[in-house]
Amino acid sequence: MPKLSAGFSNSRCGLRAGVRWPLFAVVLAALSPATALAYEEIKNVEPRPDPWIVNGCEIKPETVCRHADLRHADLEKADLSRADLRGANLARAKLRHANLKGANLSGANLDGADLVIGFLHGAKFIEASLRGANLSFSRAIGADFTGADLTAANLEMVRANKANFECALLNNADLQETKLYNSNLAYAVLDGAKLRFTIFQDAVMDGCHGCPMDWQKGESAWEIEAKDRGSTDLKK
Image (cartoon, rainbow, N blue to C red; front, side, top):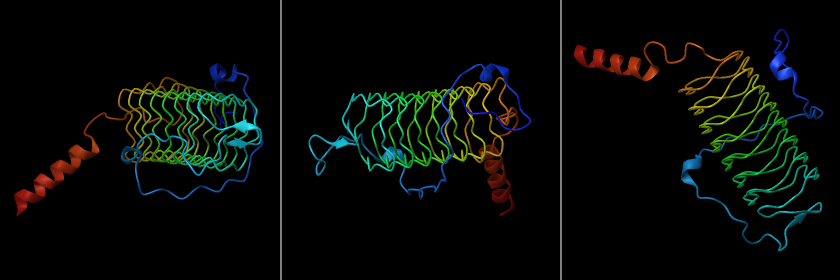
């Protein structure tokens, strides 16, 4: 379980016994200009070998590769839906546009991994390490990041409706324009996170450190902009 930031103690989260991976030097992947909405679900296609095996792990839906060593592996556009990758080492793996729907990556190491435009619906990242990982433009609806370490991760434009971030570390994470409708941020830590245009509609924030507790109180940014436009029109 990742440690909480200095000066903040949370006994509820501290009760969990998680996996601690060593801290890797992280290079963030370049942002893609496209959004996840523009892509269809990916299936394994040629020219991938058949069977497609990386370090003893067969890359296919529902594969079982617990604790597999997949560091730096090129798994772009792989179909790993419902795969069991618990405890796997995927540090800096290339999972851009991969299908991880329903996959179990609990306790896995995804430090610096490229998950841009990924399909993460219902995937489990419980107590996984995603330090510096790039998840931008991905869909993570209903994903479970309970106790995960997302320090300095890029979640820009991620759609994470109903996702669970309870006790997660999101220190210095990029959450700009992230959609967190009905998500659970209870006891999460967001110190230094970028929250420009982040949507927290109906999100649970009990015990959260760094959450904007006053979000959506008063006029919203778009309401203010509309008023400004109206004032400008009246002056013309």
